[in-house]
Length: 380
Image (cartoon, helix red, strand yellow):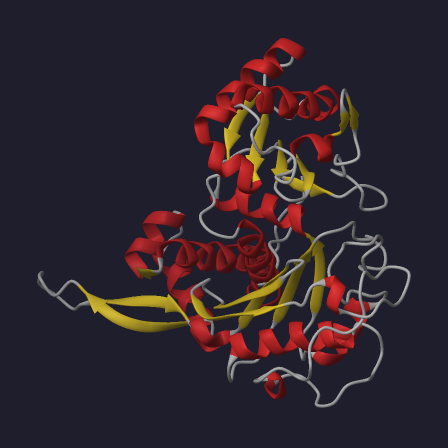
């Protein structure tokens, strides 16, 4: 077993204390000692170290109702860094900005024009230019002017929406969620996603327009991150998120890690051939109008069975509009149908992430990047 060096031990203790402050908001030195089990001198040293490095500060005092000196209350310096989560839909761009503690400090949304009103260009695009000019607020973190390249207006809209949500704040990390398969090697979209104005190398263009590292991730993968951290899969190492909306897909988490596959295609279940057609055609919101709940549950279970048979995740979460609106009743029916198909015991739960799960996942991913960079990575 590898023995921790003093430097490694300090890094572990510092990150432990910072994670506890993220979880609890504020803590005193005695509370940190109780939660970590560390000695008084060790906690005193780490507090001083974190204060000197500008990571925590005294935010108040406690103990006014007892004798003796009041205990100082410490909190993370929230404006040490800010991050942005971006959800690019086929008709809207939504952005949320948070400080390093995860507190929302800004948000913005802008519509995208339909593909019919845009010029076609490029093999991965469904459209060319979207909009009549640079949107208001874009000058804060977006270079003025346009390149005139196909898809440049989409870059301007995304970057301008980030700038509007950020206000005067600089971004430490920006994570963008979008439909489609993301190549794990290039980080770019590998397939057409139907978003008006999307083009090859759009991520590279965004990185030139936004003054922060930009990461592109598949939307369903980001929804799974949210489900794992704050939703129905919290505390589970293995699960599959089945996304049931206007698009259909899945995300796979095994041993606590999101699995993207060799080419980024893990979870691309929409094209799965089932009785009656593709899985997407059978369960997307466009095609299930008027379908009774039992029939819908049977279709979902048939599609979920493939993932369950191959991965044995133990949990399937039903996300997207259909999964959330169906609630426990639909999840229970899918569970019954799935049990009849598979000998592998599998729980089925509806999504419990409030609001936009994709945006939550993008923000949580961006926060993880900031925490790793600023607080330090916990040594293995």
